Length: 217
Image (cartoon, rainbow, N blue to C red; front, top):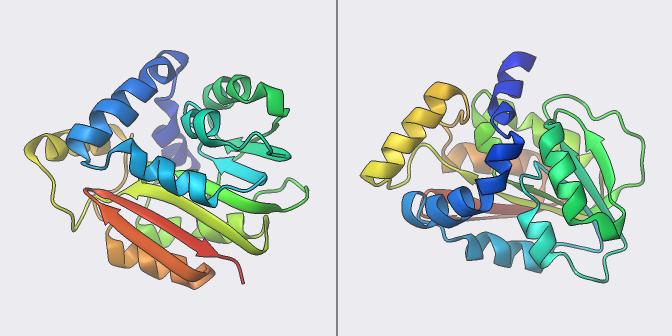
């Protein structure tokens, strides 16, 4: 695992790609390839997001735009891709977001007040290494979570789920290009990583996607 391979997983998110992200990823891919309609991820987000929230791997800002409560007192964004940060910052500009550029596989050096909730949607499958290696992300993020706070998210599993023909082809292309790195990501490894760092761990698999959550002791 190296910095270069970490960068590869997020480098695809140019401004052009982000402009079609909601249509292609949240519309077409989730429905027809991964067989996990976006509403499942949206429902989890709505249920677990707090008024003091950190969103990690921000993408287009879709979930924040549509499901962040108007009563939100604090919202922060963390991503390695500046295009994603710029795009999402505009989406939630009225909340005056805190913006941090960083790699979740490295210790996060920013010294700020902790959060009540942290979301990590569709990031794990883009990170290099196996799920046990990627689990260091949970350790780094947990340090910025209040006791009793919740971390939740979703990831596309490359192993152990039923994939249709098109899902297999697309996942193969994404892994070859370095956009995904999830060929060996499976449910058992995800549970192992989550249980190492959190309590009250919950995981639900919908199609190829695992929706997960855990609390900081």
